[in-house]
Amino acid sequence: MAVPKSRLLIIETQRRRASRAWRIARAMWRNGRVIGREFRAPIGVFLVAIFGGGWLYGELLVRAGYERLPFLDLPYTMLALMLFQVPTELPRQTELILFWYLMPLVALYVAGRGVFEFINLFYRSDKRHTSWEEAVASTYRNHVIVLGVGHLGTRVVRALVQMGFEVVAIDLKPDDQKNVELTELGVPQVVGDGRLSNTLDKAGIRHSRALIVCTSNDHMNLEVTMRARDLNPGLRIVVRVWDDQFAAQIRRFMNVEAVLSATDLAAPSFAGSALGIEITQTLTINDEEYSMIRLQVAPGSFLDGKQIDVLQDEEDMDIVLHGHDSSVQVHPAGETVIHAGDTLVIFALHRKITDVVARNQRHRSNRGQG
View: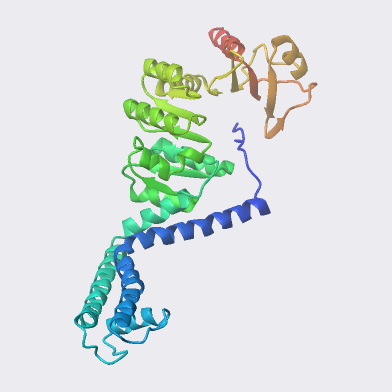
């Protein structure tokens, strides 16, 4: 019997919608600045030429004996010279004549460099996309950063988005399929090495609430953890590692909230699958380990025929879900009687959970031997 999966949802409110609209507006402004940096050289030369050059041209005119032009007319005069227009009669002074020949050259440089930068930006769609993603990520606050968008990282991102959290992804070599999924989820991605401060800053590490490191390289995960802890001392960090001893060292010395090793994560799943049960990762609360388990009541088990309230009192556990035939009850009534074949979801101390599993399976084994 399948047990419905639960997930945490954050309700979409008007405040959250307004916050998202404001973030998009900030991202557009930031992206405009990013694109402006691509054209800063020609734009800078153009502004210096029309304003600085205009002021200098006006001062030289006065020194040559001409009437002083209004300052507002000087930039227009420079622009007219760039476009091969004749604003006044050709002066006789050499220093003024130079402006008449230099301004068209400046215009040629600005136009040529600008066209080059535009074509470069237009055809390098990957660069344009990366700039936009970084601009969006820079506007996030109180978000979660997921580093390593592989198989595990993608599932983590998907789960966080379903829960209603804002997420920024970091990956060194993203692939097209993952890019498409992240775009559909509305998750910006920063492309770069997560061990570098610059990459973490682009993802907003100083303003994030948590960092989840999902790469399969233990040494890289350690470097990322050290760098992130240095940039944001109060950050919650969750790290995936393969080596159990390495996990203990990271937890002890790096002040990491959770270090999840592959063996620790896989062991309950393997054991549970073999027995036809599902067991959660153990939670440690006040130095006590708790777990939640889904199991099917075996015929002849100590659970068979007992009321829920009696079991909860005698066994010091909480039965949070009871499934019988096609019906499922969350927080079932205490007087409900459990029968063989029913599905239970139980929360208790981990040692109690393992005891319940063993006793339930023992009766099944004894029944099979008989």
